[in-house]
Amino acid sequence: MKSVFILWHTQEIPDQEKDAKLIGVYESREAAERAKRRASKQPGFAEHLEGFAIDEYQVGKDHWTEGFVTVTHTENEKA
Image 1: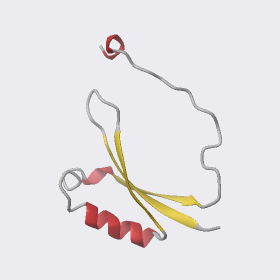
Image 2: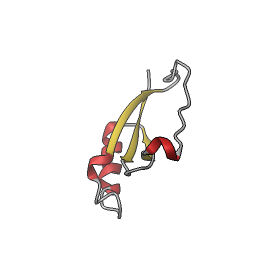
Image 3: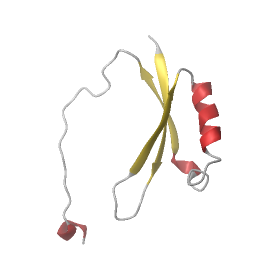
């Protein structure tokens, strides 16, 4: 089965939701690594190199196979 490789950058921001950026989708891990090297030279990414991740996904396959629950936070809950 064919796979694609997804390059993400995620950053934890205090008192906020996680900030995730989809950099791109590539046909090989090597292409995703090259994209990571390019992105890592850009402002913001260069200061947060630990945020990069490459995930492999098979094409034509469900990857989220269960439901979900939405959790909300109010200002009072953050205290």
